[in-house]
Picture (spheres, rainbow, N blue to C red):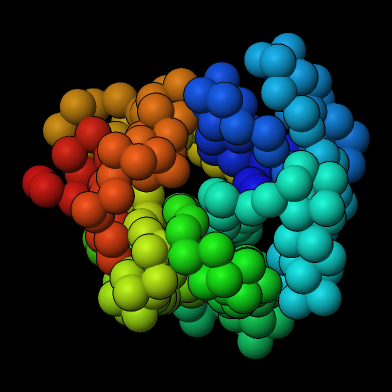
Length: 241
């Protein structure tokens, strides 16, 4: 199950999981874009289930989990990737901005974990991969609310990894740095702004979408069975600099 699978990092993760042999339940708010991802999954020879889902609404995520189990037979991997961002100084943000980002970025991860919990615990196995952000670790002006939500994802991942270890479930997170997606493409289209964003990245480049899939597959596979509660930074060295 991959949320936010309609484009960008979510689509890349969903396709990588399919290529590694997984049938995938695809969730996002845009059904049209989900259908495009589904076509990629099917080209990889796997089954795709498209479910239009607002991750901020628990009942919709619960229905997504039920549909995945019903249509695909079981649920082994949960990727909580859906996210939104608004960039502005905190003094210019509103209470609505706060609620919007918290509801999707943090509550959405809670909803995915909570809805899957009874099934993963009952089968005593499962892999949860939460998508955080380097912003949850590194301060960047204009990202106060977004960073707070992603810091929350890192803390939730750490604690849930400990809580669910006895059930045979591993919970880890990926914290991407700068990847060019539909959400931030306008910023990287501006040479001066792009240079400013990348000046603190030791590799001096953005990530490529094909670079996140293999890490997600690793965290979803038996190769990571002894790892839980961890956040892996895929950021060109930004968090280490």
